[in-house]
Image (cartoon, rainbow over all chains, first blue to last red; front, side, top):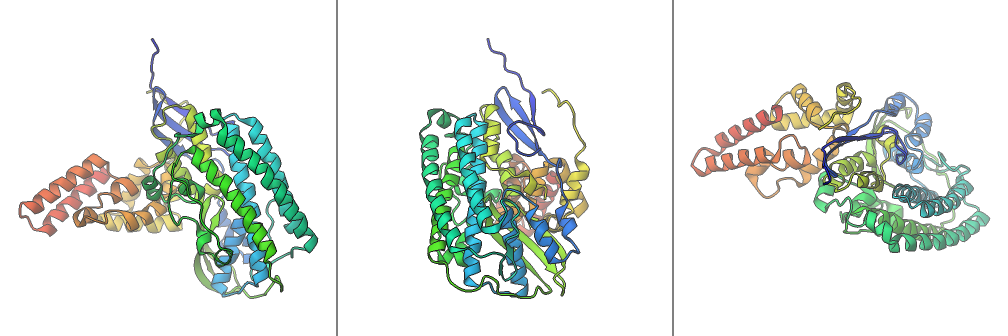
Length: 362
Length: 129
């Protein structure tokens, strides 16, 4: 007869499926997970403290370094917060270029997150296909900004580089390639019977639990939380007719599928931006002044908030960053993983929420 | 239940999380709402919550104020959902018994203010227990 034992299982801080160090302490009764405790602190950067007292020109580069995967949105939210404080207007062309770069970054982040999930459930073939497609996305990010990661593309009052017509044409051609490849990858994911066994009905988080923990981004949208995409309130996205993608299953499968669907949505948004790209300057100029503002933007993982206080020279006196992973990791540990029927589902469920420890330990 | 191979003392790191600008504001607001000192509340939180829940405290508090106990005024005064689901300082069974006792007192003709004050005192005790 099989003997059931109650054990405490630590996962991490170093684990083959984790991209970054974190320790999950699981208390189990046999295979059933009763309780999970998250232990952080293995890579605390103290970046908010480093930012204090520095001029915005330095903080702008530090902001990107909170997270290497979604660095563009950190740049964007910080700069747009500074623009809000100083009442700086952005030229329409620059606003559209910001959306293009932001959506390329979102695609790269979503594809990497889904790569991680496929790798965790040991579907390495699809995982490697996804990484290959991500390279094309990063190439396009480099084409427009000159860098694949930490692009420092946005500055108060505009962006640093324009999109040349030949680069726009090359980008559109690459997007066709990425779209075709992604359709194939999604088909593999959607129809894979083994993938379904590891993903459908696993790590379910209800809409109420998602709201309680203030879950954000694709993790919230997979649980059917309405009006949870801040792009709905961003003027440029509204001009582009952006609509939120929502699913209701709330399981691992839904979270991965929301990200896949958002990649296609990003492709459409970039195409729309290139087609309707307004003429005009890409830098409007402006001076950063004293003030205080809290500004949020939709990062690939969800709502990213910067609360900034500056002096008359644009020096950052105080700053607080609330990253989406703070909410998502907590919801994952205390709602999705709790009551998992197999310890093997802990890693896949954790990865399905796209946890970014670098963001959490900013 | 077997123990872990190694275990770190996380109290200092938890305290650092709780004393950052936005978290400190949330802790002070919760302490005011419960009617206890900030230091005692911090101590209770460090004991009960893991690091990720402490990091997410501010968001949970915001959501709790927005969505918790919207239909029942007695539950809202005691923070029935707020302190069990959103900021889980009290376990559900204890809060349920406090709520039942308070509503029973009001039903039996005790002054509402008195019953609620007693209920809140019990919530404070439950947080510190």
